[in-house]
Image (tube, rainbow, N blue to C red; front, side, top):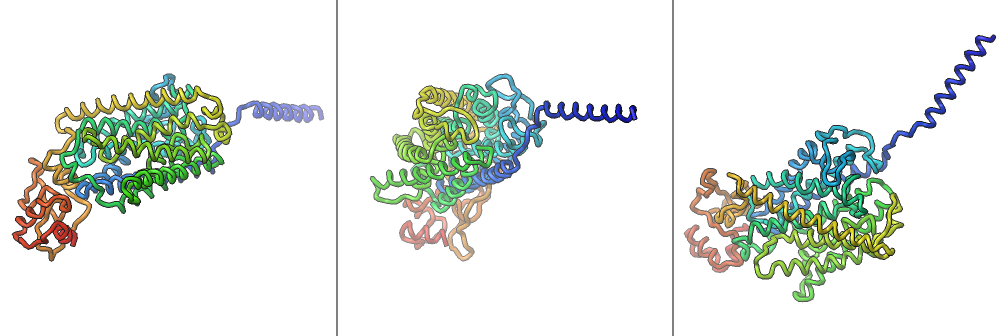
Length: 508
Protein backbone atom coordinates (compact mmCIF):
# COMPACT_ATOMS: atom_id res chain seq x y z
CA UNK A 1 0.00 0.00 0.00
CA UNK A 2 2.85 2.36 0.77
CA UNK A 3 4.36 2.28 -2.73
CA UNK A 4 0.90 2.85 -4.26
CA UNK A 5 0.26 5.79 -1.93
CA UNK A 6 3.62 7.32 -2.78
CA UNK A 7 2.94 6.96 -6.54
CA UNK A 8 -0.48 8.59 -6.19
CA UNK A 9 1.00 11.44 -4.17
CA UNK A 10 3.74 11.96 -6.78
CA UNK A 11 1.21 12.07 -9.65
CA UNK A 12 -0.98 14.52 -7.75
CA UNK A 13 2.01 16.73 -6.96
CA UNK A 14 3.17 16.75 -10.60
CA UNK A 15 -0.33 17.55 -11.84
CA UNK A 16 -0.66 20.47 -9.43
CA UNK A 17 2.77 21.80 -10.45
CA UNK A 18 1.89 21.65 -14.16
CA UNK A 19 -1.45 23.35 -13.55
CA UNK A 20 0.26 26.09 -11.55
CA UNK A 21 2.87 26.57 -14.32
CA UNK A 22 0.13 26.86 -16.94
CA UNK A 23 -1.69 29.42 -14.82
CA UNK A 24 1.47 31.48 -14.50
CA UNK A 25 2.35 31.30 -18.22
CA UNK A 26 1.18 34.27 -20.33
CA UNK A 27 -1.82 33.52 -22.50
CA UNK A 28 -1.12 33.24 -26.22
CA UNK A 29 -2.55 36.18 -28.20
CA UNK A 30 -5.79 35.30 -29.91
CA UNK A 31 -7.14 36.32 -33.31
CA UNK A 32 -10.73 37.54 -33.33
CA UNK A 33 -12.37 35.60 -36.16
CA UNK A 34 -15.14 38.18 -36.53
CA UNK A 35 -12.64 41.03 -36.84
CA UNK A 36 -10.62 38.98 -39.31
CA UNK A 37 -13.70 38.40 -41.46
CA UNK A 38 -14.62 42.10 -41.42
CA UNK A 39 -11.13 43.25 -42.43
CA UNK A 40 -11.00 40.65 -45.23
CA UNK A 41 -14.31 42.01 -46.54
CA UNK A 42 -12.96 45.55 -46.17
CA UNK A 43 -9.90 44.60 -48.23
CA UNK A 44 -12.22 43.55 -51.05
CA UNK A 45 -14.01 46.89 -50.81
CA UNK A 46 -10.72 48.78 -50.99
CA UNK A 47 -9.69 46.79 -54.07
CA UNK A 48 -12.91 47.93 -55.76
CA UNK A 49 -11.78 51.53 -55.27
CA UNK A 50 -9.01 51.08 -57.86
CA UNK A 51 -11.33 50.59 -60.87
CA UNK A 52 -13.58 53.18 -59.22
CA UNK A 53 -10.73 55.68 -59.33
CA UNK A 54 -10.07 54.66 -62.93
CA UNK A 55 -13.66 55.38 -63.97
CA UNK A 56 -13.68 58.65 -62.02
CA UNK A 57 -10.50 59.87 -63.73
CA UNK A 58 -11.54 58.46 -67.10
CA UNK A 59 -14.86 60.29 -67.08
CA UNK A 60 -13.24 63.59 -66.14
CA UNK A 61 -10.68 63.41 -68.96
CA UNK A 62 -11.03 63.69 -72.74
CA UNK A 63 -12.29 60.61 -74.60
CA UNK A 64 -8.94 60.13 -76.33
CA UNK A 65 -7.35 59.62 -72.88
CA UNK A 66 -10.20 57.65 -71.29
CA UNK A 67 -8.59 54.22 -71.28
CA UNK A 68 -5.13 54.97 -69.89
CA UNK A 69 -6.42 55.81 -66.41
CA UNK A 70 -8.31 52.55 -66.06
CA UNK A 71 -5.19 50.74 -67.23
CA UNK A 72 -2.83 52.58 -64.85
CA UNK A 73 -5.05 51.88 -61.86
CA UNK A 74 -4.99 48.15 -62.55
CA UNK A 75 -1.24 48.26 -63.23
CA UNK A 76 -0.73 50.00 -59.89
CA UNK A 77 -2.66 47.19 -58.20
CA UNK A 78 -0.40 44.56 -59.78
CA UNK A 79 2.94 46.35 -59.37
CA UNK A 80 2.39 47.45 -55.77
CA UNK A 81 1.15 43.97 -54.81
CA UNK A 82 4.54 42.53 -55.81
CA UNK A 83 6.44 45.40 -54.21
CA UNK A 84 4.40 45.00 -51.01
CA UNK A 85 5.19 41.27 -50.90
CA UNK A 86 8.91 41.72 -51.50
CA UNK A 87 9.72 44.67 -49.24
CA UNK A 88 6.90 47.23 -49.00
CA UNK A 89 5.02 45.71 -46.07
CA UNK A 90 8.24 45.22 -44.13
CA UNK A 91 9.35 48.83 -44.66
CA UNK A 92 5.93 50.13 -43.63
CA UNK A 93 4.96 47.94 -40.67
CA UNK A 94 7.97 46.14 -39.15
CA UNK A 95 7.22 45.95 -35.41
CA UNK A 96 10.84 45.33 -34.41
CA UNK A 97 12.58 48.23 -36.15
CA UNK A 98 14.35 50.36 -33.55
CA UNK A 99 14.29 53.63 -35.50
CA UNK A 100 11.27 55.86 -35.99
CA UNK A 101 11.60 56.46 -39.73
CA UNK A 102 11.62 53.19 -41.69
CA UNK A 103 11.02 49.51 -41.11
CA UNK A 104 13.54 46.67 -41.27
CA UNK A 105 13.49 43.30 -43.08
CA UNK A 106 11.29 41.50 -40.54
CA UNK A 107 8.45 40.90 -43.03
CA UNK A 108 10.49 40.90 -46.25
CA UNK A 109 9.13 38.37 -48.75
CA UNK A 110 6.22 37.94 -46.30
CA UNK A 111 8.52 36.14 -43.91
CA UNK A 112 6.80 36.04 -40.48
CA UNK A 113 3.49 36.93 -42.09
CA UNK A 114 1.32 34.27 -40.51
CA UNK A 115 -1.76 33.63 -38.40
CA UNK A 116 -0.41 35.43 -35.34
CA UNK A 117 -2.05 38.80 -34.56
CA UNK A 118 -0.28 41.89 -35.83
CA UNK A 119 0.92 43.84 -32.74
CA UNK A 120 -1.78 46.07 -31.34
CA UNK A 121 -4.60 44.36 -33.26
CA UNK A 122 -6.82 41.31 -32.98
CA UNK A 123 -6.48 40.36 -36.67
CA UNK A 124 -3.92 37.99 -38.15
CA UNK A 125 -0.81 39.44 -39.74
CA UNK A 126 -1.62 37.98 -43.15
CA UNK A 127 -5.01 39.72 -43.27
CA UNK A 128 -3.47 42.96 -41.99
CA UNK A 129 -0.80 42.81 -44.71
CA UNK A 130 -3.36 42.30 -47.47
CA UNK A 131 -5.59 45.11 -46.24
CA UNK A 132 -2.77 47.64 -45.93
CA UNK A 133 -1.20 46.66 -49.25
CA UNK A 134 -4.32 47.77 -51.11
CA UNK A 135 -4.03 51.20 -49.47
CA UNK A 136 -0.58 51.54 -51.02
CA UNK A 137 -1.79 50.40 -54.46
CA UNK A 138 -4.60 52.96 -54.47
CA UNK A 139 -2.38 55.80 -53.25
CA UNK A 140 0.29 55.18 -55.89
CA UNK A 141 -2.32 55.58 -58.65
CA UNK A 142 -3.71 58.90 -57.40
CA UNK A 143 -0.96 61.34 -58.55
CA UNK A 144 -1.44 60.47 -62.23
CA UNK A 145 -4.57 62.60 -62.32
CA UNK A 146 -2.44 65.74 -61.91
CA UNK A 147 -0.58 65.16 -65.18
CA UNK A 148 -3.39 63.61 -67.18
CA UNK A 149 -3.29 63.58 -70.99
CA UNK A 150 0.50 63.99 -71.25
CA UNK A 151 2.30 61.17 -69.38
CA UNK A 152 4.00 58.13 -70.94
CA UNK A 153 3.13 54.69 -69.61
CA UNK A 154 6.62 53.16 -69.27
CA UNK A 155 8.08 55.72 -66.83
CA UNK A 156 4.75 55.62 -64.98
CA UNK A 157 5.37 51.97 -64.15
CA UNK A 158 8.81 52.77 -62.72
CA UNK A 159 7.34 55.71 -60.82
CA UNK A 160 4.78 53.49 -59.09
CA UNK A 161 7.34 51.15 -57.56
CA UNK A 162 9.90 53.86 -56.73
CA UNK A 163 7.34 56.23 -55.20
CA UNK A 164 5.75 53.48 -53.13
CA UNK A 165 9.19 52.56 -51.76
CA UNK A 166 10.62 56.00 -51.02
CA UNK A 167 7.48 58.00 -50.18
CA UNK A 168 4.49 55.87 -49.17
CA UNK A 169 6.37 53.21 -47.17
CA UNK A 170 8.30 55.66 -44.93
CA UNK A 171 5.27 57.88 -44.21
CA UNK A 172 3.08 54.85 -43.46
CA UNK A 173 5.75 53.72 -41.00
CA UNK A 174 5.88 57.15 -39.35
CA UNK A 175 2.12 57.20 -38.82
CA UNK A 176 1.12 53.59 -38.10
CA UNK A 177 4.05 51.33 -37.20
CA UNK A 178 4.46 50.66 -33.45
CA UNK A 179 7.74 52.64 -33.35
CA UNK A 180 6.95 55.27 -35.98
CA UNK A 181 8.06 58.72 -34.88
CA UNK A 182 4.67 60.35 -35.48
CA UNK A 183 2.74 57.58 -33.77
CA UNK A 184 4.93 57.64 -30.68
CA UNK A 185 4.33 61.38 -30.39
CA UNK A 186 0.57 60.93 -30.31
CA UNK A 187 -0.32 61.67 -33.94
CA UNK A 188 -3.92 60.73 -34.74
CA UNK A 189 -4.48 59.23 -38.19
CA UNK A 190 -7.26 56.69 -38.44
CA UNK A 191 -7.04 55.62 -42.08
CA UNK A 192 -4.51 57.68 -44.02
CA UNK A 193 -4.42 61.45 -43.63
CA UNK A 194 -0.63 61.61 -44.08
CA UNK A 195 0.39 58.46 -45.98
CA UNK A 196 -2.59 58.39 -48.35
CA UNK A 197 -4.18 61.80 -48.81
CA UNK A 198 -1.47 64.37 -48.09
CA UNK A 199 1.16 62.20 -49.78
CA UNK A 200 -0.88 61.66 -52.96
CA UNK A 201 -2.00 65.30 -53.08
CA UNK A 202 1.49 66.77 -52.79
CA UNK A 203 2.89 64.14 -55.16
CA UNK A 204 0.24 65.35 -57.61
CA UNK A 205 1.32 68.95 -57.06
CA UNK A 206 4.95 68.03 -57.79
CA UNK A 207 3.83 66.09 -60.87
CA UNK A 208 1.79 68.99 -62.27
CA UNK A 209 4.56 71.52 -61.66
CA UNK A 210 7.25 69.33 -63.17
CA UNK A 211 5.26 68.39 -66.27
CA UNK A 212 3.87 71.83 -67.02
CA UNK A 213 0.47 72.55 -68.62
CA UNK A 214 -1.11 70.49 -71.38
CA UNK A 215 -0.67 71.72 -74.94
CA UNK A 216 -4.34 70.88 -75.54
CA UNK A 217 -5.63 72.35 -72.30
CA UNK A 218 -8.30 74.63 -73.80
CA UNK A 219 -9.59 71.90 -76.10
CA UNK A 220 -9.64 69.10 -73.55
CA UNK A 221 -10.92 70.93 -70.50
CA UNK A 222 -14.42 69.44 -70.05
CA UNK A 223 -15.20 65.86 -68.90
CA UNK A 224 -16.11 63.55 -71.74
CA UNK A 225 -18.33 61.15 -69.78
CA UNK A 226 -20.12 62.39 -66.67
CA UNK A 227 -21.76 58.96 -66.35
CA UNK A 228 -18.31 57.47 -65.72
CA UNK A 229 -17.67 60.18 -63.12
CA UNK A 230 -20.85 59.20 -61.26
CA UNK A 231 -20.06 55.48 -61.56
CA UNK A 232 -16.52 56.02 -60.30
CA UNK A 233 -17.77 58.12 -57.40
CA UNK A 234 -20.27 55.43 -56.39
CA UNK A 235 -17.55 52.75 -56.47
CA UNK A 236 -15.15 54.93 -54.50
CA UNK A 237 -17.82 55.80 -51.93
CA UNK A 238 -18.78 52.14 -51.55
CA UNK A 239 -15.15 51.09 -51.13
CA UNK A 240 -14.37 53.97 -48.78
CA UNK A 241 -16.73 52.49 -46.21
CA UNK A 242 -14.39 49.52 -45.99
CA UNK A 243 -11.30 51.72 -46.29
CA UNK A 244 -12.20 53.69 -43.16
CA UNK A 245 -14.35 51.32 -41.12
CA UNK A 246 -11.93 48.46 -41.81
CA UNK A 247 -9.14 50.57 -40.34
CA UNK A 248 -10.66 49.93 -36.91
CA UNK A 249 -9.21 46.40 -37.41
CA UNK A 250 -12.20 45.07 -35.50
CA UNK A 251 -15.92 44.61 -36.01
CA UNK A 252 -17.09 46.77 -33.13
CA UNK A 253 -18.75 50.06 -32.24
CA UNK A 254 -15.75 52.11 -33.33
CA UNK A 255 -15.87 50.58 -36.79
CA UNK A 256 -19.56 51.44 -36.86
CA UNK A 257 -18.81 55.04 -35.90
CA UNK A 258 -16.21 55.26 -38.68
CA UNK A 259 -18.81 53.94 -41.12
CA UNK A 260 -21.32 56.64 -40.12
CA UNK A 261 -18.86 59.54 -40.14
CA UNK A 262 -17.44 58.51 -43.51
CA UNK A 263 -20.86 58.43 -45.14
CA UNK A 264 -22.06 61.68 -43.57
CA UNK A 265 -18.96 63.64 -44.51
CA UNK A 266 -19.05 62.48 -48.13
CA UNK A 267 -22.73 63.39 -48.45
CA UNK A 268 -22.29 66.81 -46.84
CA UNK A 269 -19.23 67.76 -48.87
CA UNK A 270 -20.88 66.68 -52.14
CA UNK A 271 -23.91 68.89 -51.50
CA UNK A 272 -21.70 71.77 -50.34
CA UNK A 273 -19.54 71.73 -53.50
CA UNK A 274 -22.61 71.51 -55.74
CA UNK A 275 -24.30 74.44 -53.99
CA UNK A 276 -21.11 76.51 -54.23
CA UNK A 277 -21.16 75.94 -57.99
CA UNK A 278 -24.87 76.69 -58.22
CA UNK A 279 -24.39 80.23 -56.92
CA UNK A 280 -22.51 81.54 -60.00
CA UNK A 281 -23.86 79.12 -62.62
CA UNK A 282 -27.44 78.42 -61.51
CA UNK A 283 -26.79 74.79 -62.53
CA UNK A 284 -26.84 71.65 -60.37
CA UNK A 285 -23.54 70.15 -61.45
CA UNK A 286 -23.19 66.37 -61.22
CA UNK A 287 -19.42 66.69 -61.60
CA UNK A 288 -19.39 69.23 -58.78
CA UNK A 289 -21.37 66.93 -56.49
CA UNK A 290 -19.13 63.94 -57.24
CA UNK A 291 -15.89 65.88 -56.81
CA UNK A 292 -17.18 67.33 -53.55
CA UNK A 293 -18.19 63.91 -52.26
CA UNK A 294 -14.68 62.61 -52.93
CA UNK A 295 -13.21 65.66 -51.16
CA UNK A 296 -15.39 64.90 -48.13
CA UNK A 297 -14.40 61.23 -48.12
CA UNK A 298 -10.75 62.32 -48.29
CA UNK A 299 -11.13 64.75 -45.39
CA UNK A 300 -12.83 62.28 -43.07
CA UNK A 301 -10.21 59.57 -43.70
CA UNK A 302 -7.84 60.61 -40.88
CA UNK A 303 -10.74 61.52 -38.57
CA UNK A 304 -13.27 58.72 -39.13
CA UNK A 305 -12.63 56.78 -35.92
CA UNK A 306 -11.96 59.82 -33.75
CA UNK A 307 -14.88 62.22 -34.29
CA UNK A 308 -18.63 62.21 -33.68
CA UNK A 309 -21.21 62.36 -36.49
CA UNK A 310 -21.90 66.08 -35.96
CA UNK A 311 -18.19 66.81 -36.44
CA UNK A 312 -18.21 64.79 -39.68
CA UNK A 313 -20.89 67.14 -41.01
CA UNK A 314 -18.76 70.17 -40.10
CA UNK A 315 -15.71 68.64 -41.78
CA UNK A 316 -17.85 67.97 -44.86
CA UNK A 317 -18.94 71.61 -45.12
CA UNK A 318 -15.39 72.88 -44.67
CA UNK A 319 -13.83 70.44 -47.15
CA UNK A 320 -16.54 70.88 -49.77
CA UNK A 321 -16.19 74.66 -49.80
CA UNK A 322 -12.43 75.05 -49.27
CA UNK A 323 -11.39 72.32 -51.72
CA UNK A 324 -13.62 73.84 -54.40
CA UNK A 325 -12.11 77.28 -53.79
CA UNK A 326 -8.59 75.89 -54.15
CA UNK A 327 -9.63 74.07 -57.33
CA UNK A 328 -10.90 77.31 -58.85
CA UNK A 329 -7.85 79.31 -57.75
CA UNK A 330 -5.31 76.81 -59.14
CA UNK A 331 -6.93 77.00 -62.56
CA UNK A 332 -6.60 80.78 -62.78
CA UNK A 333 -3.61 82.06 -64.73
CA UNK A 334 -2.90 78.70 -66.35
CA UNK A 335 0.45 78.08 -64.63
CA UNK A 336 -0.62 75.08 -62.59
CA UNK A 337 -2.39 72.45 -64.68
CA UNK A 338 -3.52 70.04 -61.96
CA UNK A 339 -5.70 68.36 -64.54
CA UNK A 340 -8.07 66.40 -62.32
CA UNK A 341 -7.70 68.40 -59.08
CA UNK A 342 -5.58 65.86 -57.22
CA UNK A 343 -3.91 68.54 -55.12
CA UNK A 344 -7.12 70.47 -54.47
CA UNK A 345 -9.07 67.37 -53.44
CA UNK A 346 -6.50 65.04 -51.86
CA UNK A 347 -3.78 67.42 -50.74
CA UNK A 348 -6.00 70.15 -49.35
CA UNK A 349 -8.67 67.69 -48.22
CA UNK A 350 -6.05 65.65 -46.38
CA UNK A 351 -4.75 68.76 -44.61
CA UNK A 352 -8.27 69.79 -43.57
CA UNK A 353 -9.06 66.34 -42.20
CA UNK A 354 -5.75 65.96 -40.38
CA UNK A 355 -5.97 69.35 -38.66
CA UNK A 356 -9.66 69.05 -37.78
CA UNK A 357 -8.98 65.63 -36.26
CA UNK A 358 -6.86 67.49 -33.74
CA UNK A 359 -9.83 69.77 -33.06
CA UNK A 360 -12.79 67.37 -32.93
CA UNK A 361 -11.30 64.07 -31.65
CA UNK A 362 -13.18 62.78 -28.62
CA UNK A 363 -11.96 60.40 -25.95
CA UNK A 364 -15.19 58.43 -25.68
CA UNK A 365 -14.99 57.45 -29.37
CA UNK A 366 -11.34 56.43 -29.09
CA UNK A 367 -12.30 54.44 -25.99
CA UNK A 368 -14.68 52.24 -27.96
CA UNK A 369 -11.75 49.91 -28.69
CA UNK A 370 -8.60 51.71 -27.54
CA UNK A 371 -7.27 54.40 -25.22
CA UNK A 372 -6.19 57.95 -25.88
CA UNK A 373 -6.99 61.61 -25.41
CA UNK A 374 -9.24 63.86 -27.47
CA UNK A 375 -8.60 67.11 -29.27
CA UNK A 376 -9.10 70.82 -28.77
CA UNK A 377 -12.80 70.52 -27.90
CA UNK A 378 -11.76 68.48 -24.86
CA UNK A 379 -9.05 70.90 -23.83
CA UNK A 380 -6.09 69.14 -25.47
CA UNK A 381 -4.57 71.97 -27.53
CA UNK A 382 -1.30 70.10 -27.87
CA UNK A 383 -3.01 67.60 -30.18
CA UNK A 384 -3.55 70.29 -32.82
CA UNK A 385 0.17 71.10 -32.71
CA UNK A 386 1.02 67.42 -33.23
CA UNK A 387 -1.37 67.23 -36.19
CA UNK A 388 0.15 70.40 -37.64
CA UNK A 389 3.78 69.29 -37.63
CA UNK A 390 2.78 65.86 -38.95
CA UNK A 391 1.04 67.61 -41.85
CA UNK A 392 4.06 69.78 -42.60
CA UNK A 393 6.45 66.83 -42.39
CA UNK A 394 4.39 64.60 -44.70
CA UNK A 395 3.72 67.39 -47.23
CA UNK A 396 7.30 68.64 -47.41
CA UNK A 397 8.87 65.18 -47.55
CA UNK A 398 6.46 64.01 -50.25
CA UNK A 399 6.87 67.06 -52.47
CA UNK A 400 10.67 67.11 -52.36
CA UNK A 401 11.22 63.37 -52.82
CA UNK A 402 8.55 63.08 -55.52
CA UNK A 403 10.05 65.96 -57.50
CA UNK A 404 13.48 64.33 -57.28
CA UNK A 405 12.02 61.03 -58.51
CA UNK A 406 10.47 62.77 -61.52
CA UNK A 407 13.70 64.60 -62.32
CA UNK A 408 15.81 61.43 -62.18
CA UNK A 409 13.35 59.37 -64.19
CA UNK A 410 12.99 62.06 -66.83
CA UNK A 411 16.75 62.14 -67.39
CA UNK A 412 17.21 58.39 -67.78
CA UNK A 413 17.43 57.15 -71.39
CA UNK A 414 14.05 55.95 -72.61
CA UNK A 415 12.17 57.09 -69.50
CA UNK A 416 11.27 60.68 -70.41
CA UNK A 417 7.94 61.39 -68.76
CA UNK A 418 6.08 63.44 -71.33
CA UNK A 419 4.62 62.25 -74.63
CA UNK A 420 5.50 64.15 -77.80
CA UNK A 421 3.26 67.01 -78.88
CA UNK A 422 1.70 65.11 -81.77
CA UNK A 423 0.95 62.17 -79.45
CA UNK A 424 -0.64 64.48 -76.90
CA UNK A 425 -2.91 65.85 -79.61
CA UNK A 426 -3.65 62.33 -80.83
CA UNK A 427 -4.40 61.00 -77.35
CA UNK A 428 -2.38 58.90 -74.91
CA UNK A 429 -4.65 55.88 -75.37
CA UNK A 430 -3.75 55.39 -79.01
CA UNK A 431 -0.21 56.78 -78.84
CA UNK A 432 0.91 54.74 -75.82
CA UNK A 433 -1.43 51.74 -75.78
CA UNK A 434 -2.53 51.31 -79.38
CA UNK A 435 -6.07 51.06 -78.09
CA UNK A 436 -8.89 53.41 -77.23
CA UNK A 437 -12.01 53.36 -75.13
CA UNK A 438 -14.59 53.95 -77.84
CA UNK A 439 -15.09 52.95 -81.47
CA UNK A 440 -17.57 55.32 -83.06
CA UNK A 441 -16.81 54.19 -86.63
CA UNK A 442 -19.43 52.05 -88.35
CA UNK A 443 -19.01 50.17 -91.60
CA UNK A 444 -21.58 52.31 -93.42
CA UNK A 445 -19.90 55.60 -92.43
CA UNK A 446 -18.36 57.58 -95.28
CA UNK A 447 -15.76 59.13 -92.99
CA UNK A 448 -12.21 57.89 -92.72
CA UNK A 449 -10.91 57.21 -89.19
CA UNK A 450 -9.81 60.21 -87.12
CA UNK A 451 -8.07 60.45 -83.80
CA UNK A 452 -9.87 58.31 -81.30
CA UNK A 453 -12.29 56.98 -83.95
CA UNK A 454 -11.80 53.88 -86.11
CA UNK A 455 -8.31 52.40 -86.36
CA UNK A 456 -4.80 53.74 -86.76
CA UNK A 457 -1.32 52.22 -86.68
CA UNK A 458 1.68 53.67 -84.89
CA UNK A 459 5.24 53.14 -86.07
CA UNK A 460 7.04 51.70 -82.99
CA UNK A 461 10.37 53.26 -84.03
CA UNK A 462 9.34 56.79 -84.93
CA UNK A 463 6.23 56.90 -82.69
CA UNK A 464 4.40 58.55 -85.59
CA UNK A 465 1.16 57.47 -87.16
CA UNK A 466 1.33 55.69 -90.53
CA UNK A 467 -2.16 56.66 -91.63
CA UNK A 468 -2.53 59.89 -93.61
CA UNK A 469 -6.18 60.14 -92.70
CA UNK A 470 -5.53 60.93 -89.06
CA UNK A 471 -6.63 64.24 -87.63
CA UNK A 472 -4.64 64.99 -84.46
CA UNK A 473 -7.68 66.76 -83.05
CA UNK A 474 -10.27 64.80 -81.11
CA UNK A 475 -12.75 67.53 -80.35
CA UNK A 476 -15.21 68.91 -82.85
CA UNK A 477 -17.69 70.84 -80.81
CA UNK A 478 -15.26 73.57 -79.79
CA UNK A 479 -13.16 74.06 -82.94
CA UNK A 480 -14.64 74.92 -86.31
CA UNK A 481 -11.36 74.05 -88.05
CA UNK A 482 -12.12 70.40 -87.40
CA UNK A 483 -15.06 70.58 -89.82
CA UNK A 484 -12.80 71.65 -92.67
CA UNK A 485 -10.27 68.96 -91.75
CA UNK A 486 -12.91 66.22 -91.79
CA UNK A 487 -14.31 67.50 -95.08
CA UNK A 488 -10.82 67.46 -96.62
CA UNK A 489 -10.13 63.93 -95.41
CA UNK A 490 -13.45 62.49 -96.51
CA UNK A 491 -13.59 64.37 -99.81
CA UNK A 492 -17.14 65.28 -98.93
CA UNK A 493 -17.91 68.99 -98.62
CA UNK A 494 -21.44 68.19 -97.53
CA UNK A 495 -20.44 66.51 -94.29
CA UNK A 496 -22.59 68.33 -91.83
CA UNK A 497 -22.59 72.05 -92.30
CA UNK A 498 -21.87 72.68 -88.66
CA UNK A 499 -19.93 71.09 -85.82
CA UNK A 500 -22.97 69.33 -84.39
CA UNK A 501 -23.50 67.39 -87.60
CA UNK A 502 -19.85 66.36 -87.67
CA UNK A 503 -20.17 64.99 -84.16
CA UNK A 504 -23.39 63.21 -85.09
CA UNK A 505 -21.69 61.49 -88.02
CA UNK A 506 -18.74 60.46 -85.87
CA UNK A 507 -20.94 58.98 -83.18
CA UNK A 508 -23.12 56.92 -85.54
